[in-house]
Image (tube, rainbow, N blue to C red; front, side):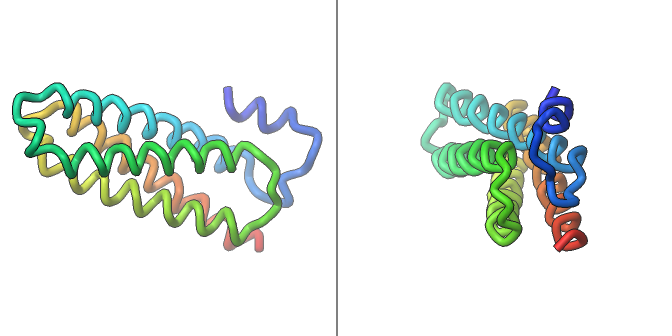
Length: 135
């Protein structure tokens, strides 16, 4: 649904591939949801104190992914800002994936969250590469 919305916008994207933006938005939103669910699930685990760093990492990642999706949905026209935001989002996703992977063997929610984080990290990197090509 994101791609048709982007394509229906009357402003041009300045050479940026709408499919790359739509994919990144969708992966950011999916990752934000996965991180929010994972954080909540971690809070329900018996050894919640052992998952404190995971919860914080999930929440940071969810916030950055949500913000990235919202900014990408607008026509800011500022490639430098988008690049910095995508870099920060990719880094948050990488850190969250690494943290969740440490718990994945015992907590399925962490395994699923790590997968979503890796997809989002890849999407952010792909869009960053595309932005470099259009700058």
